Image 1: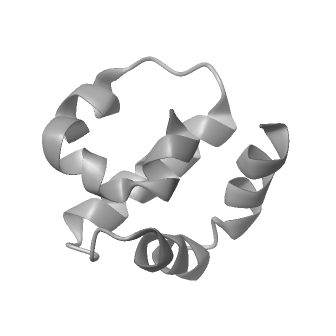
Image 2: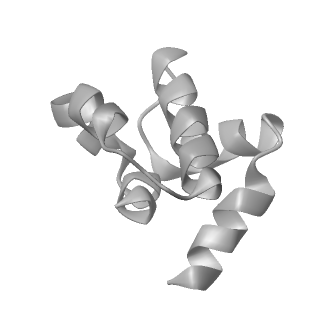
Length: 71
């Protein structure tokens, strides 16, 4: 689901609060979700490129790459 949000961040408009409450066991996914939600809260444009740029600025690009490789 995290990769789907990375690729289609506009989906957060419909269920950001619900996604934020889903329990995640992986610390990587927890950090990445927190970063995505932070970008969303900062009103980063809801396109994949802008969210990925913000995650990179926040130092989370290695986590993005890790999730992409896992799929």
